[in-house]
Image (cartoon, rainbow, N blue to C red; front, side, top):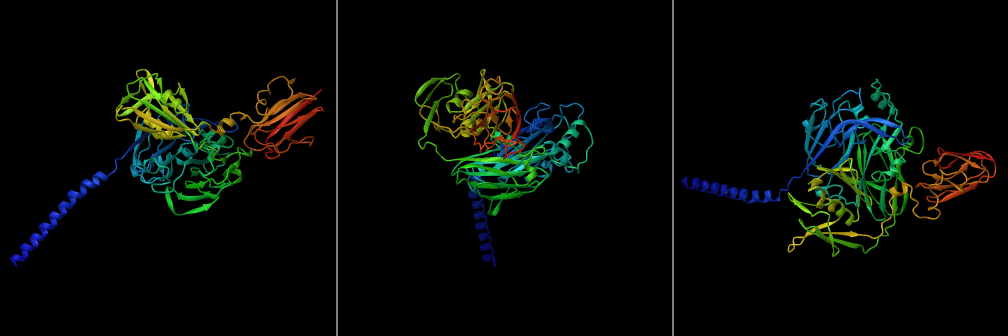
Length: 585
């Protein structure tokens, strides 16, 4: 018995020693494998403001702002972007309304679809609301890549309608272009945040009058706060691509009504719903999205052309009863004609040295790069313009705006957050004023425009490289601003409408209306209509005295008026577009 007991004791000691060795060996390995958690910090302010509707009317709103300035509410709130696994800290400060006589109400943030704990859920029933003058820091970990949104949960039906909502995007780990970590890849993604507006509610809140919250009659429907045709002027609400590209469309319904969204020209795959991957993709060209739902749509462009992407609920396509409008935008896909041999831009610079080389050519810098707390800062205009980016300094906002192709980047002085293509991102280092000059963090700008950073171990120079193409297709936005694109008959067709009627011919610009809508001319004069829209239009006389064929974008139609009288005309494709010509002797 004694021998057996000793044997058992020996076996137990061996097992204990083996367990200790296992713990000793395994623990360091797992701690080495553990990933460093990144904390993303954001600051928002709750206040009021105004927004412009497509017909020019002003609408009183409540919302979240990036500025500590009453009356600066954004509609919708800035889209926030983090990566899977990030620790997120969002501080909301309620600074109250600017408009006098408005109730100073409490606000919160509820992160719709993110599984936060009770304290950070933003529901006044379970945690205190944020009163005017107070702040609260929401803290959580973004565990699942996907599409979400955030909104105020105080008197939700009113506050959300007033504009207190925004998109919240969790990208795959390290920000890779995957729908989720290890999921389908894409070239770029778009967020379409849907909502609807009942102006009666907004007016009642602005005037402090009671209204019936069960009596809801929207007159405007928006994508990212824009209604057609303004969606085509906003690069975040208008899809641009080339044949062969794969695009992820994040569809969010933050409103109260369901919408049936249809894509022309392509079928898409629904790959995720409400922030979770579907077991199998579903191929469709129309998706019904209910209030609060989100769908991730993956589409690969296999043909070029311009195609609508819009709600198939017919009323959704109007602005205050006028068609077209509302939940309608376009997909513009071009053939990939890029130069297969792009130019490589190489910049070599060094902290403390006031010169750099650009493709081997030495240049003098306005200020020397500075190394500060592990971040290399460079002159904001030098790095932008050298990498082929348009640079604008916005003095009032104390911010720099970089624009390149379909990418926009905005950084504010001393702010740890920036906007990239309309989305709010957390910065590792802020825009800073150093020795009297504004400098930008080099790595952040380089990564956003696809440049690479390396270091020469011998010279300690930082090497910035980026592939740049000589020819860049004109953007859709510049077309909307009135450029003619250099096409036939385009260069001489603008700027004549305000001149004397002795100018012949007079020009009427066609956009989403006829501009000017009314003209008075002499008998024998000619009117030339120039289509500056992306859609095809016509010019039809109400009395059938003249009519045009389809007028393609950048094309024109002319008519000489040989008889006096009043001529009312319209677009036969868009009959709400009406113009008038008065012809006198």
